[in-house]
Length: 181
Length: 178
Image (cartoon, rainbow over all chains, first blue to last red; front, side, top):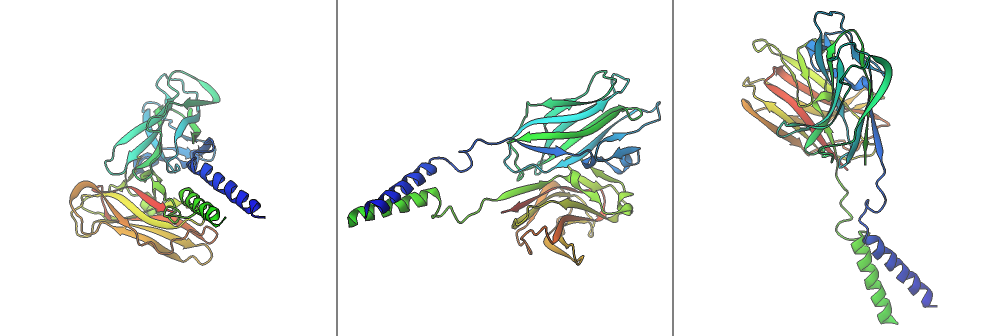
């Protein structure tokens, strides 16, 4: 009669001791998670930039410059809400670049900003530099992440999208994906 | 038999303690943290949108005319997890403005979707800290209405730049919750 409860108790003790050896959250393989960034999250960087002709929707963000004698570069920003203590694995950016000039391209940089010191550090970056002249959507990836561990106590996170040498509406940002564990 | 049972009970108690079922570590839930980039701020309306605002990865501010500063307002929409309990709000800022009325006030607010009533949950101000070029932070740990209920409320940060000029800037906020 006593053997059964004692055995059950022993099994319970053994199970608990075994589970204690595996720290919580580390036992299971960490799964890959994805954060998508809508082009609608992008905003011009200032009042002055907002006066330019820009378009932001659920499918794309771009500037439209028809003053061909005055091509300009502009940066836009999207705030990012990354999970605290996540480890960033890669940045994917989908874009279109049918710019007819060598300098006409898009640069996308994932940055962290030290809230106390103001230091802004690059974590990942992709660009469409070169002459593409292709209306197709394309995707670039950067899997070499610097400062990959998210620390929301010390840093805020943003995506910087830079449109270089803007002419017409030929370079567009369609969105980004951030893979993390 | 009694000795054996005592031994097993002690073993069970020890096992439960080290696995955290009981013991000191169990009661304390893990803090989670949300950081708010200054790039998330939006001028409050078309009048504030028309002011000379600047927004990037490290700061948001209104660069109004030094000789004619105006109160300027901005918001950040927040997506907080349902059921989370907000523990604190920390705001990082620079306040190098020397005017008596020039200060930055940041309020974490909830808005009752049914009634329209808005309530402050946490509040910070840079009042009384003028003319300092360094970055500083202020924290509010006395959070009211702290449990997030997305079925009834929406949430936002409300940032007021009293006499807004480029000498005081919002650098970001950190919200700690469980």
